[in-house]
Length: 221
Image (cartoon, rainbow, N blue to C red):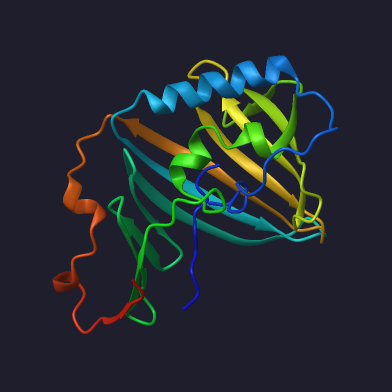
């Protein structure tokens, strides 16, 4: 079953977390770090976070090939992502990945290794070990003043060569991201709205089989 991982927010951005910083690379921009640290601290201060986002895929010729909308819930180590016909539930111990078209769910134990991607990592401190970053000129995004941070991965084997991260200048929250692939394709994720400290119950992070009649369960734990 094809799995779609958000990413997170910055969904991948789905492949942002991977390797530690090698020695011998250039220094990061301290002004960019201030912006990133402020955005990270803002999210870490929330008890819960509810957000909707738009995913857009652009081909090398600049044509938009695909646009999809999704939503996300976060609470501590728990999260739930709904995107492109799939739902990912995580209660901090187990992960359920449900494919609506196949009416199939895969269950696996949570992998806490550094190579895994979760919305929490995408919204917080993924940047320090994996990227060289600098602050670009401010831009307007959805009519709001936005700080653009250009990020280059230390690992040159990544399929992408650059990530642009956008942070709302006033709210100090992540507004979206664009990933530039080596094949010329680009994909972006824009946060449409977010509700910090929304009322979210723990049962929203657990797959309830009774609500999915006839679902095929594949337990990989």
